[in-house]
Length: 213
Image (cartoon, rainbow, N blue to C red; front, side, top):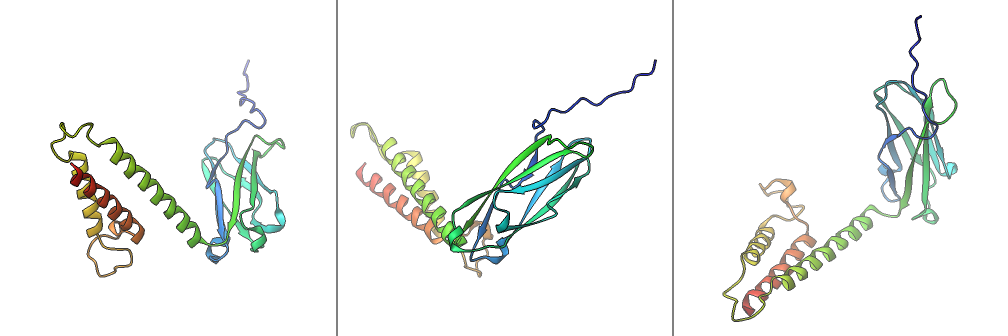
């Protein structure tokens, strides 16, 4: 007798959902960020239908909040922030994407995406730059303490690592600064003023370490 081949039954809520990005950041002073795009991927061999839910739907406009994705295809979901006010700064909202088979109502999988409104992109970049500087300073102090000679009698001069770090810092100081459009050096080698300050600080520490040896 001919037996019909059946597709294995999918368990509700266990299907992995692939969405990028998993975090949306809106900046109040940058209108271009008030519109974000979520991409939903369907790597499976069957079509999916999706639905986008939000914890604060009054703050956002979701274009095509429900629809379908063909097998091994993707779809873009546009999300606009329509309530950009200072009282919403730092508040974390959540979007939930639910997917299911086109012939079924039960949700086979779900994925949450967080959304945050921040006052300024420049302030965020400044905080990240300050964080990187602190990390660089911590690393430089660690190197200084880790590679100090155990006794003056054994020390015969600066270590190769110290010399290498010094050369790297000097090279960093010689690279052009961001905004220098006349330089022939590729743009990705241009350093910010803060990065050069870190290099100068580390170079000073290395110089002091060498003079002590």
